[in-house]
Length: 161
Length: 438
Ligand code: FES
Ligand code: FES
Image 1 (cartoon, chains in turn yellow, red):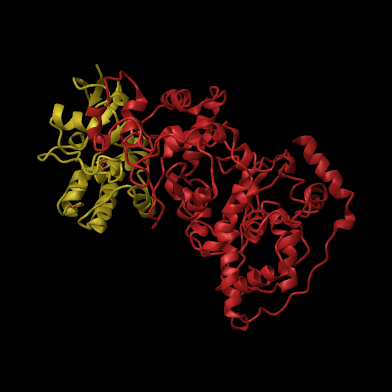
Image 2 (tube, chains in turn purple, orange):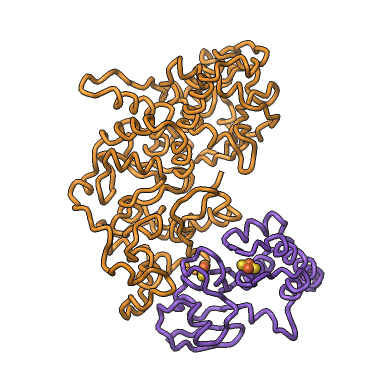
């Protein structure tokens, strides 16, 4: 049986080892932020973070999450207490239909964790695997920039400690 | 290699006579002075020669140079071949251009490094040199000095290259073959000359020269294997003229897979040249023979195992997979590679994959890690990479398993080092997709 650390908590998975992680998240754990878009690793809607790396959960068999840290959008904050990235997306009103947004946010989360000072060009290049049918790209970029700016003083302060 | 360097240096020193004189600068010719038809021909020839591919930096102006070319000897930067008088070739006469192309000596008389494939371009006819000159001299001039090369002494002494040339630069023997038709001859001229296929597909010796006795037996380029062509090919299905044509034109073939790595820009260039030129290249390449493996193998069915419609999408695919334990291939690969759809919408059957039958695991490892990234604006098969989620041990076990199932060869002894090298290259490139697109 697969066991993973999901948003900070150790969870046992009932589904078969080859089940796509996306299905496990949505059906077994009721975490519906990650979306099914294409099922082929081509749109980014299902993106989650495993051990700091953004991955397409639709093509990732859950066996690969064994004993690893899986973070979904639900792990970044709640409706009542949104995390800085979520706050920035709300402030920038970056969602149109919103279907692509959780995936975009998770990849941005991984990028900013790795490189808090990511340039606009780096953010663009990083998000290249993600599609948005609604065309909110400019607002998404603005939201990520906002989030990076909001997070930076804190991360610099932490680094200084 | 140390000895080799000394060897080159010695040969170079002995060759003071190899000094080449400067060719006098000319006022930059007016672009309008060239016949448009000649310029058009030059454009096609420049595509076949892949000039743009090396002489353009990522996101840089076309032909303005500056692309870093990692070689086993150090990093070279491609030069500016726009007609800018100061930083490009604006003051080069046609004679100077011809000498650079065919002898590897620039207008000032300096020997050029053989990363510039003059060992192939030497075959270029006078007419084609004229067309290429007309093409380049009518490009927009861009002022862009190339970054200095990063080479160790004594390779910084260009005269050492005279020694290299003395040892390795031989005129191509392109004597007519009465048994062959005109198309074949045209193809041979393009493949051996401007197309410089052997620059990647032939192995090189310790001094970086192609080993002519082992032409087309497979080489490497920028962290990728350039597969053996012709008789040494390890393709599970023999290549034929039609398949070569389709692959070179479309960038993929349902029985052979997708051109990626440094081959991707090559097929993008060939997609733009007149059909007959590519057809001629395909005819010549087909005449190099089919590999032993290819000749023996029957063509496997294009639609393997699962019935069409059973596993159309990755996320829906687990239903089609029998309880497979921790079988990574079954869990991660079969949905596309046994999904019953040929490329471009599905993956090829891995029984057809030369990446798996090849003697080196490097391409398979690259593909597992990076997939087939989208290349701007082309309708091409794509594959997601698994490098972000697979550990090195998992990549190794998957690659070894694929080799066992489909490779028909011995296990790869150098699998772990190939994975280490591919990971290191991937880290260097901020984003693999961006690094591979130019
Ligand atoms: S649903 Fe996973 S990439 Fe589209
Ligand atoms: S907001 Fe609708 S797809 Fe991006």
